[in-house]
Length: 378
Ligand SMILES: [Zn+2]
Image 1: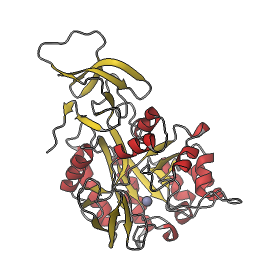
Image 2: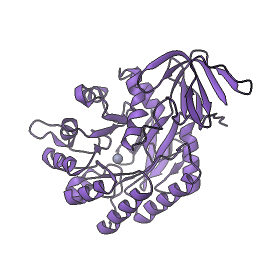
Image 3: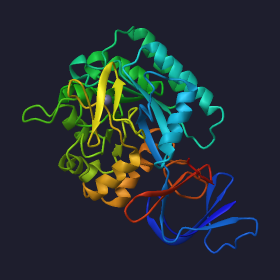
Image 4: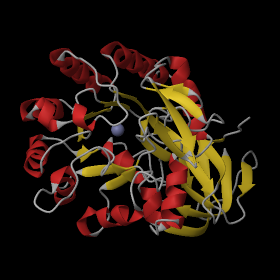
């Protein structure tokens, strides 16, 4: 129905210069020399870049909403729309160390949302905690929990929707990690004091990744490489909060070297202050203040970020020196891989869902297409 012309397309693999592509039935169709039908709308992108819509696997909220406080269907709709303005077209709604009633409500809301979601605005769900180490809680409010009840809930969730669980292996043990992994739960390690050996055993038991590498975990030190070292030595994937505040660019670049390329992906870890004019909010019972783009709670602890994923792409290129195509893959193709959706999301290739991000040379978002249609924002 819509033809985009005069654009550079980043397919996920390579950049194709001065191309055209058609968006038909909500899917991408590469045009080549095909003749445009009279009924089709032609949009001249004047040399702008077309990239896959961004995929964010850790979104706690946005524009004043925090899923921990409001896990409703309306909240999901609102947060989806907020992040879409910045080029994120698929999210995993996330709660951090929430009571099980909140987690159940979020799951129900996601399932309701997905009844009318063929373009995958919600591509999964992420439960970060409460099975974490209280010593590495960060901004989480430690919860009391019934372990058996939570495990059976995770197993149920994974049957219904791609389900990421972040847990500390030293808290749950490897038999539970093995059980969850074999049943389809995508197990990530995080908020953990795991030693190098414990972390490697957890990866052997089925954990496939590490959440926000470097933050809230055992660091890489002389005689104890910790969860950071184990992650970089294993085949597991890992997320990074690429806002330039959570992790030094030197560490980001170190983690992307050699065989680790392709394992790392950005997450926003966005809180209620993302996409919001407000400078303060309440997160896990504590006042959080946004200052110079950094969110810190009243204990002086980083409490998520206020930036959408596109900011991480832009900053990682402009401040961190990450190649633009790799920075984009880390926000699209690689996270789509984590949830096994890379056939449809995170690429601009024939038959993929037509969720697209249009950027200029400065990597600023100038247009967003969702389900093959140009998004118009208020
Ligand atoms: Zn966290």
